Image 1 (cartoon, rainbow, N blue to C red):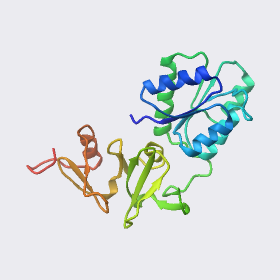
Image 2: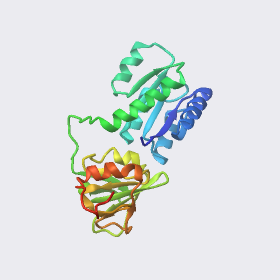
Image 3: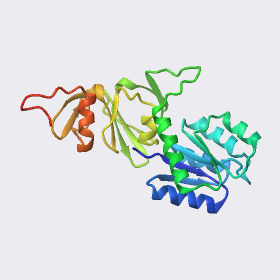
Image 4: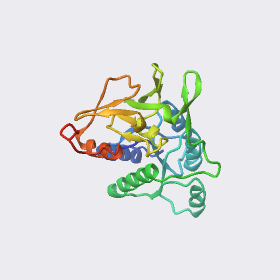
Length: 252
C-alpha cells in the first residue's frame, strides 16, 4: 500500500513528537507539525498533505481543531483524524459535521493509532463519496504558473513522482506540468478503471498503453521510450490490460 504524507496539528509538544516518531517508524512521511491553525494552513499550502491528524481542542490557537480541519479541507480533499483527551459531546457533535475518518481518544496506543491511520487511508482511496453537486467526472483543474488549467483525464498519459511534487505528461504536448502535489494525492482524483500504479514513481493511463514486453511497458506519446515494469506488479498489469497469454512470444 502506498503510504500517505501526514500533517500533524497538535499543540502539546510531547504528543506531537510521539505521533511523528511513531508514524515515521511505520514508514509514513510527516510533512510538518503545526501548533496553531495559521501554522497548519501555511504548512499545508507549502507542502500538501494527504492525511491530517488534528488535536480537537488546539489550545492557544485562534481556531480550534474542528475549525482548523475545515480550513484545511477547503484546500484539499483528504481524510481527517481527530485526537482528544476530553469526552465532550458538544465537540463530538461538531466534529461529526465534517465527516472525519476517525475520532481517536487520548491516551492512545501505538497499535490503535496505526490501525486508525491505515484504515482511514484505505477507506479514503477505495470509497467514492459523491457530494450532492457532483463534480465533472471527465476533467480536473490543476494549479500551474498560469492559474488553474483544465486537464481532461483521458489526455493524461502518465504521472511521475518527483520528490514531494509530481510531473504530469499529456498527449500531444511536449511540455510537462509540474505540480506541487504528491502522486498518491493525485491518484485519488483519477479513476481506478483507467489508471494503474505501476510503481512508487509512476501512475500510468492504461488507455495509452501501446505494447509491453517482458520488462517494459510502452505508452503512446510517452516522453520516455519505455517504463520498467516491477516484477511484483507485472501480473496485475497484464490482468488489467486483458493480456491473452499464448504463443512463444507472449510476455511472461
